[in-house]
Length: 231
Image (tube, rainbow, N blue to C red):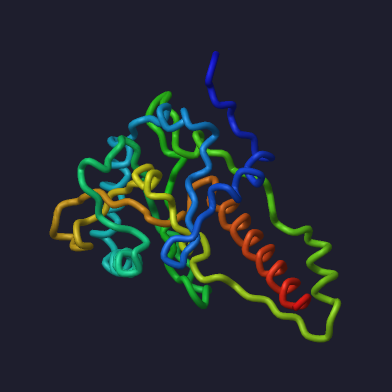
C-alpha cells in the first residue's frame, strides 16, 4: 500500500531516537516509541476495564487507610512535581491505564511505587504496550561492568531517583497516558482523569527511553571533554 510507514523494529529505535530527543525547560523530552504512526489509531478503548479496576482499588483503600495514605502521598507529590496533572474531557482518547501499588519497605528511597498497566485492554482491542516498541536492550554486559568495577582502587556507583519520571513525554503523546484518580487527591470528591507528563513505570518503551537518553547524555559529555582537552 502506498505511503504506509513501515513498522519500527527494536533495532531501529536507537537510530531514530536522537532525532526525537529535545530539551524543554532544562529537561529532556521525547515521544512514546510507537511501532508506526498508524498504531495510535489501533489503540482500543478500555475505559470500563480501568473503571472496574479502580473500583477494586477503592475497596482496598476503604479496608486499609494506611495504604490509601501512602498511595495518596505519592499522587500529591507527583502533582506538585509536575509529573502528572488533571486533564480535561477533551484529553481523553479512550485508553486508560489501570494502576496498583508495589510496597517496598526495605527500600531506602521509594517505599511505595505506583505501577501502571499499559498492557490492559478490552476484548480484541490493542493495548498501549502492543502499539509500542520496546526498543534495543542497552544494558551493559554484566562481565564488562564487573571488570570495570575492579579496575581501580575506589569504585563509584549511583542511582537516579525516579529515573523514568525525569524524562518528559512529548505533549502530543501525553493523552495516551491517562489514568483515573480522585479529583485533587480528595477521596470525598469524584474520580476524574489525569495524565502523565513524564515517562512512567509499566509502559514498555520506558526502559529504552531512559537508557537511550543516558547514552545520549554521556556521548555529549565525552565530546565536550575531548573538545576542552584540545583547547
